[in-house]
Image 1 (cartoon, rainbow, N blue to C red):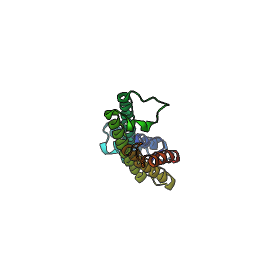
Image 2 (image 1 turned 90 degrees about the horizontal axis):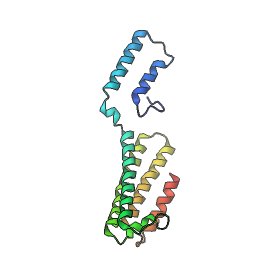
Image 3 (image 1 turned 90 degrees about the vertical axis):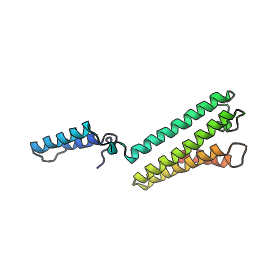
Image 4 (image 1 turned 30 degrees about the vertical axis):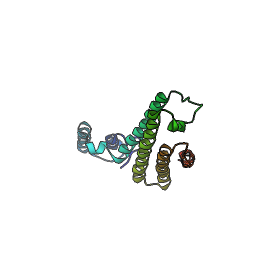
Length: 170
């Protein structure tokens, strides 16, 4: 049973059942309210970490890993300028640490995006929504390709262009 807006707090959906126009006796309402309050006070840990919620945490973690590694690479490089240089320029930086941080962020972020897309795609039932998360999986794959193949290789540009196009399509 899903309630819009109550996916983060499933017990609120149960409490909303009290106010549905269903004939219940006073004792049934009291018993239901007591059980719902007991569940709120003593939550079941498996209900808190559902597949969709774990996937959301993984998606947020992936964004944070990529962002932090990008910022670390920019700080280590020192010559990279926002709006002047491309993000991929960090992959061919003269500073080894900047190259390593950028590659690490791309690969770990891409793996996280792929896992996020797969987990959410498995929990969806509508085909168009599944397609969106399948595109997210492909975006993660392309991000890994951008990290592994720097600008001096031939494979970098197809991965970079595909990443941009898939991100827009998703």
